[in-house]
Image 1 (cartoon, one colour):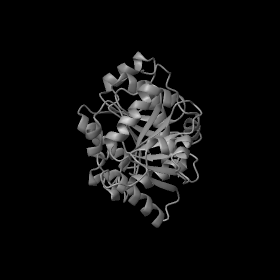
Image 2 (cartoon, rainbow, N blue to C red; image 1 turned 90 degrees about the vertical axis):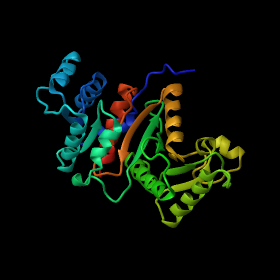
Image 3 (cartoon, rainbow, N blue to C red; image 1 turned 90 degrees about the horizontal axis):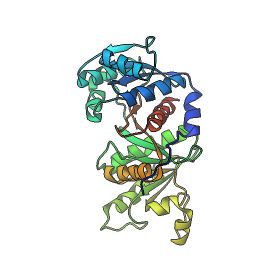
Image 4 (cartoon, helix red, strand yellow; image 1 turned 45 degrees about the horizontal axis):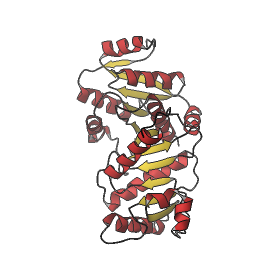
Length: 304
């Protein structure tokens, strides 16, 4: 059942990122083969101008292994993960880099540094994670949020997640995103709290004049399949045509995305939004294609 399909970088995302000027990027804890390979490819594709943070000797050794001359790039010597993360946050705070890229470091260590008040990287928005999902190169993307950062977000937090997702989707070329608030049913029922929350989020989106079509609750089939929506008689602009899926909690989003990766060969481009700079957050098991796509997504997110 596991997919052996090659994971492909989505053409539209890569083209959008390539159409901008090269972005200065901090590679935090770069001492890893997969991190260096994806950084090399993103650099050779004129997406980023990297600054490496970590053990200089190991970074240079990993570069030599993949026959990449990094002599013209800055390497900031740091041995401790906490200090690597702090240095990356400092560079972002000083606007010396435009995106942060997680290397071989735990996400919680990186985000702890990012959240420090002294760096002033948090705006009025709440941070949230989003995945840009595609199966084939020219697919229309499906955005799934938040399956990696906010564990069990309250409704107020989900409104931030919603707005972050809409803003990012628009930057990829979707003029008026269609957003499905996911639950296990299309009818709000008290025994399923996520369905009640979904209804409230959709109502708040309408009341706040959010520039997107927002509907909920919707089960996954009703959100993405026109046929399923038709059979069940669900008639709204989102049903069967969702661009964005707002999941009820982290477990639901994470499981959905990992299933698409491992059963369908999907390319998952994952980034954290809502701060002054986007943060590329990939899993240690992610493919090189997903890592490059994530870098492209961060560049697109940073564009005005």
